[in-house]
Image (cartoon, rainbow, N blue to C red; front, side, top):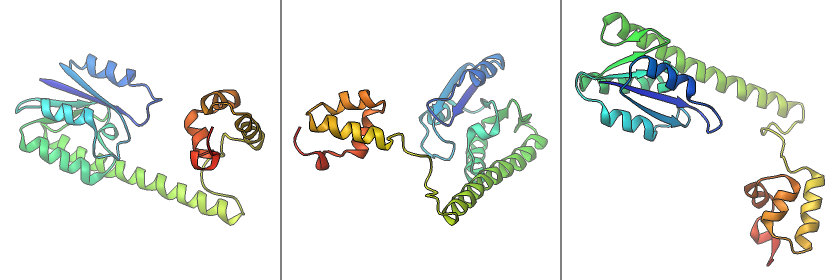
Length: 188
């Protein structure tokens, strides 16, 4: 049986491209996740692993969809191998049923881990540079501008509900509560 696994890193991203490719490859079942590849707990991957039996093949669109850590990819590959399950990556041309495919898997897993480390290094370098220039270097700017904060404060004083205030100033309720915790608002 061919078991497909598709993953994107965030809820906003679309799985359609991967699912279409896995379907075209003949996958009998397709399991999905919308979570970072760095996370070890992925329900869709767990489901795919539970479905996989001796003689089956786990099919992925691209190696980095399976994970970003070399250690994690190698451990997963070893677990699949021990269970008699092969691994096939459609865009990377990897098929662990062959010696060349196993070698290529390990090479590309190393590259995926290196790419993640480079992204982390560039991010940290950018944050340090921003701090060195007197910037905050703490990520993106808040959506709660000083004008929105002032409006929210006036609406709170008038007794409006937090949900209504959040909608009026164009932020999520969670953002409102983050900036105006219940302990600082007093009874409403």
